[in-house]
Length: 145
Image (cartoon, rainbow, N blue to C red; front, side, top):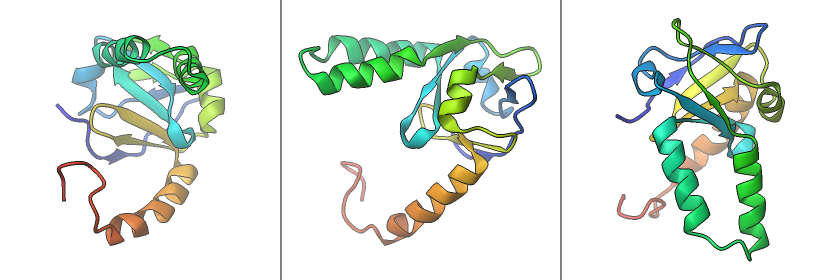
């Protein structure tokens, strides 16, 4: 199952967010929230995060500073969580700060992961990225045209 679509849940005063109902079955047994690119948060099902972390740490060399830096930032911010019975998950303060989350959030499906954005940041990002997407004629993803 791929995560798809755009949703706009609110972040409550305790730092919790309702996961979109259609995402809950894949996340109900546990998930990991971590820093993502463009100052959003990545949310992975626990098994997918474990696969990525294992690949990241066994398929690379720690002699590269860039690799070490990326692993440190990605893994040090990771927080394993289990949604409550209502489908809420708590986003730790360090991750809320990293993503600049306010009450207004946008949650998007991004294939193998969910992304959590501050709604204003998402609107800005999308307004900048959509024109290039609409004009793209060369192959960006190998095998897709």
